[in-house]
Image (cartoon, rainbow, N blue to C red):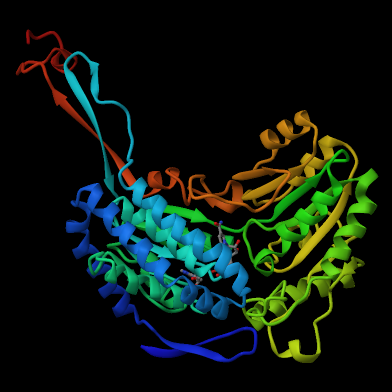
Amino acid sequence: MTDQPITDPFDGSVIDVVSYDTVEEVDRAVRRARTAFAEWSSQPPVARSDALMALADRVSSRASEYAMVESRQTGKTLRLASEFDVPGSIDNVNFFAGAARQLQGLASGEYDPDHTSVIRREAVGVVGSIAPWNYPLQMAMWKILPAIAAGNTIVLKPAEITPLTSLMLAEDAIAAGIPTGVINIVNGTGPTVGEALVGHGDVDMVSFTGSTPVGRRVMTLAAQRAARVHMELGGKAPFVVFDDADIDAAIQGAAAGALINTGQDCTAATRAYVQRSVFDRFLTGVSQVFAEIRMGDPRATDTDMGPLVSLTQRDRVAGFIDRAVASGARVTAGGQLPGGDLAAGAFYPATVVTSVAQDDEIVQDEIFGPVLVVLPFDTDDEGIRLANDTRFGLAASAWTNDVYRAMRAQREIKAGCVWINDHIPIVSEMPHGGMKGSGFGKDMSLYSMEEYTVIKHVSWDISARSHKPWHRIIFANRQQ
Ligand code: NAD
């Protein structure tokens, strides 16, 4: 074990120190999960449901503490943590407490005259999960809840820079009566602890949320033993504004959709395509809203946007803008590192970029920062084509008051979620997950229970004959 400081990206202060686990400790965590699986998976659904309800109470009773720790380890505003991350997480626990009792399948019956078919939906086993740093508590919830609601046990590795609320959650799970070994947290970096987990021979399923390149590496490791994988990967969401849209609503929606969580959101609006006749108005309006965004102390009530999660991430974002500017891009808001009091923190301003080409890296690659690229289009065909011209397919939005345009956009845009006249809201009942390079499988909703269960067909002979009619196929023309 090595001790690692967890720092606040607002001012670099140390919030806590955690121990990174060794490969042997990962192995012990997997063994604990394996041992716990036998009993947890054989509990009746109502027992798992009751335990999850107790967990929801426990997290609710510490909601303000969770929000503060989440804000400090990520730099997100306390308002976002208190009004989105924590209540969303508690709602998720309550949802999966219900979902634990709602596994579904085909009706049992005689699909041929000699057999009764029964569908069983069983837990997969031990799940190894890897989570990112942008919404640490929500990501831990999205991984843990459907897995354990379905009867699996789990070993979760949070991102190495943001493990604190996952550790709090594991403590609260024990206090809520969820048996030891059902939820296990391991700490450490991806190449060491992450790979030891996803490559472990006794992990039945790997569930990963993170960037597409790391997801590909994780899939390769899981493929060595043909383990089931669930991949929630990167995004580069288009935001398509047609000329009949409510432009003020689109401007407001683009700012909120691009800047939530300082833009470190896999579904954030990143590429605004705006029909040419309303392009100038949109660009001027959105640039003005971005320029007025107040950065500062994430705990202050008059702060709109906190720092990025780390200085590394800030420098990564700045690199995208600097390279774009060097190639002729026009920055209409932000684009400069702040000085003064904010210089020590991981701050990058809300930034609008235009005059770039569709195949530039700033349009095609995930930046994961408070950056919106705005580009024009002429025909509806072109707007939809540009929206789909990406290797990602996680989320998108279309802005129009024309029902036929909206219907076309929701059908033709290739993304796991398409919003019409809004961008970002999510609910526990609806699935979250990508298409194309954004991965496969669903978090949240009853659809996520598909990921964490296996279907078994049990076929009962009801003919009670030793020489069954179908044996004729095997025994040629001998009398049966
Ligand atoms: P990342 O891919 O760098 O890291 C994600 C996790 O993988 C971390 O816990 C990291 O330690 C671990 N990891 C790194 N290398 C590994 C390896 N070789 N083996 C095993 N684990 C390894 O991503 P990040 O920077 O933490 O998070 C941002 C990314 O997450 C963005 O791409 C974002 O779009 C994505 N994301 C996707 C969703 C979604 O639902 N699709 C949700 C949130 C974030």
